[in-house]
Image (cartoon, rainbow, N blue to C red):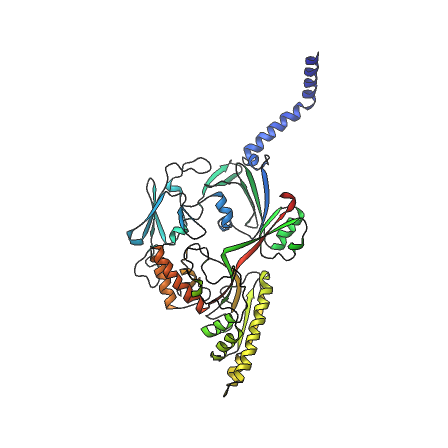
Length: 490
């Protein structure tokens, strides 16, 4: 009797809802066929983090920490700058520095199970040619000259860190109605989907066997905080300003100290768009440096090379710390030649506005003290003394113009390899301070051509001593950012 009752209920249910069930199955099959990533995007019970980040990026511009969750390169670089093997099983320099050969393993596979072949490994280096064999990849310099002072073209030693950039492979997927391009990597997390808005990535979904992460990108910190408040994200990473957040209830605030980035005042030694710069005079640069108060804790930045790097100077006592000394600053400024007024602007972003105001105040105090000291000297040149008065102003901008500025307070990225040729060599357009020093040029050239790490350390120690003393940039602190997270998630 019970069985008959069950059969009767099934028949009745099928008669009433049978068409709906069949249509639902058909529609579901069609959707999966048209959108093959639909099932992947559905939450299948994994722990999911909704993470907010500030910035508008294309895929290649995504923050390195996100890309490295999805893939890795031929090499990897440790926190101290030491190069290690990643995808490659070995590498060696050939042809007197003109080429590097990397050997691939025989069992490496992409995330979709396809075996990694040399033909699938590529980097967009404009000055190298790539030759491939069954298991090797050879990068060979193709430019006639590495730089103006180089007699032979070579690949610098720092090239080994360049090929640590994560590798990806693009695969066409979807169907003829809705074709899509899938990005395949080598790492723990797989890219399930990428959404765009106004040409930039607005969201990227990463999935692993155990959890998934959904990154959402916002143009400003205010937008990211609004998304946090409204529940669009549960975590926001990389905030520069945390003054208001510190008082929020039910929020965990974590400070991140970035040893590979520093905050500094960059001085333009060349010319700006509208006026000559006073910073070509080293005495004036040093005076401005001595006039500023700096932190005295272990986080103080003393040089352009990270303290974690194997190339960081062995004895910090060899570096001029430029601790605040107003009398020394005044003496340097009084002795300096000042044929024109010391009027200039310190450009920065809103995140560093308070720091900039404090810096300008100290500089203006220096100028007034130097003027008084100059006028008290016998036979003082009144015009020269008047020109020692500093008229510094702050300019707040969303994106400081690195091509036309007087002074600039910004955060700067430290390369993983100590080779900073592109940042400080006098021939390089990316030398935004227009700093020129033949000794520095020679050290940078030697450092990138020397294979021995011990010899390179000696070269870069001298590089640090010389550059810091010349003060084209006033080194302040490592970059600090703040992560916020809802406490109820912990």
